[in-house]
Amino acid sequence: MTGDSPGNNEWHKTVDGTSATLPFAQWLEAVAFSRDKQAFANLFKYFAPRIYGIARGKLNNEALAKEVVQDCMSNVWRKAHLFHQEKGSASTWIYTVMRNVIFDTLRKIKTNSKCILSEDIYPLYEAVEVVEDVHETVAQSINEKRLADMVEQLPVAQQQVVKGVYYQELTHEQLAEQLNIPLGTVKSRLRLALSKLKAQIGDDHD
Amino acid sequence: MIKHHVPNDMLAQFAQGLLPASLAAAVSIHTDMCTQCRQQVIALQQAQTEQLCNFELAAPDSGIDDIGFGDVDFDQMLNKITADESRDYVQDKPEVKVQLGDIDFKLPKALQSMAVNKAVGFGKITRAKIELEEGAIHTHLLRMGAGGEVPEHTHQGFEVTLLLQGTFADEMGEYGPGDFIMLDAEYTHTPVSSQGCVCLTVVSDALTFTSGLSRLLNPIGKFLY
Image 1 (cartoon, rainbow over the protein chains, first blue to last red):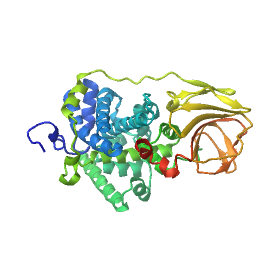
Image 2: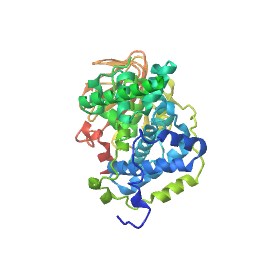
Image 3: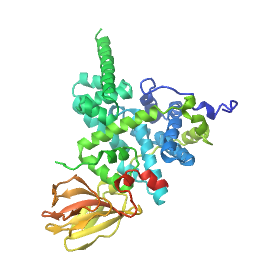
Image 4: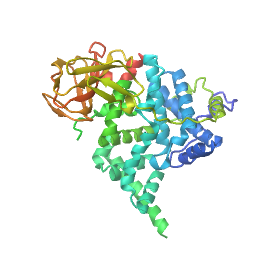
């Protein structure tokens, strides 16, 4: 720790929280609709260091990891209008932007090819539309739509089990296997999620 | 009805962007057609998102201070990005068709920016190489005209066949559009297409992938080391 500089060593303490406590989707939409630099700075502070960490682990190279952060966050800034909240979570959208950059980076290293293929192979706007199919069959009535919105507000871990069980109709066992977590964790996350949803619906009726 | 699906570990690599473009394109086209595999990719992406958000930045023992952020100047990066206020718009690319023997074939979206060589053929079998510069991995569009048959052959490394349109059959059964058929080393078969079909084929040399499938499924090693 250098201590004096207000710059870099602040980056891993400034933003803490999860998609449950931070309004990622709101920030992303502010970027999309009004080129809101403060909203983007919020996203950047949260995601840039994390993307750096993940990319560094996957690529085992600091310079490349830096490029991935640069390209990924630049794409988030320039393509935020492709994100649609009703079609998927903002953090997953940002993950897919990062994934696409990693894909193109690996291809560049291997082949010297400048051709960007990720947009054809993993289209950002279709990648989220896919989720819509799942939602639309469930969110047929207005009440169900509201419920779906509430599900979106759950922590990601709880969303996964709720969506797995109720949208994809997986068994708890299948879900445990798919997410690679113990069966007991699936059941406890589901219980937590359902009690939250019930509390919320109950509150609304009062 | 799709009967043959992408292996789970390959879906996981796909969701993380780690497959070579040839295989990633094959998986992409399959998941476009297959709800089951598509939903699995969605679930995998959500799990990966969780991993990203849970990445430990501040834990004293995580070694993050050792990693540090190198010479990354996040403030500078942030300012540089937002200095340019232009946006990227997605433009629908024009349809690309390639001549494959007796037919004009419209390329699926996943393939439309790739360089497809002029098709060459003998009899009812026509192949067009897709230039991806992936070393030992060779990718082709394969057209079997009605009544066409590929002579019996074996695969030294692996072969992925994604059926794009039409049907064919081999000793193991019949295949339809969307089927993702993965054959291991030294498997022998004789595909026959009575009505005609178009496939995307991705084949590797055994020599390079000495440890077989696991090498393919860990392409990072292949890419970087």
